[in-house]
Image (cartoon, rainbow, N blue to C red; front, side):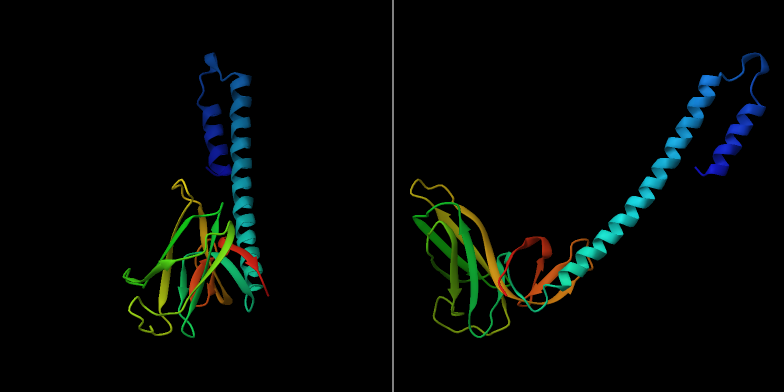
Length: 195
């Protein structure tokens, strides 16, 4: 409701009220107060929208600073480059069993094996060869799956990561995405910058 619509409604109410049962002063003041609050809420919403837009622009501007830098990000996908792909994974405590599976972009398992079970950060570099020893072509995107359990069989996996150079930014969504070694990664998932 606009100011003019409210005032027209108020004037109509005053003109058409019953002279023997007029609107009480309290009701009239309550109506004016409600309209004032409504008007302020509209103003606050407009200002919040402008602030959100400015914040989004600031996040995008800050994301530009990542270009050309090597980052570590929480994700499970990497691009095979120069015959290898490096992944990382974090464990909450020492694992007695660590099984690693690498799948291609179609979801087919291309390699399985084991990894280190140190508490904290661990690194796994896949040589780009499938389980039969055939070298796969560069450029494909591959996903790692890690299963890490302690001696009691409890999962100790926190998350998986990839490390790579940021080459671009996609701002078409509310959270900018960075292109890290050809893979889109949310800026919110960046956990470290190494250079």
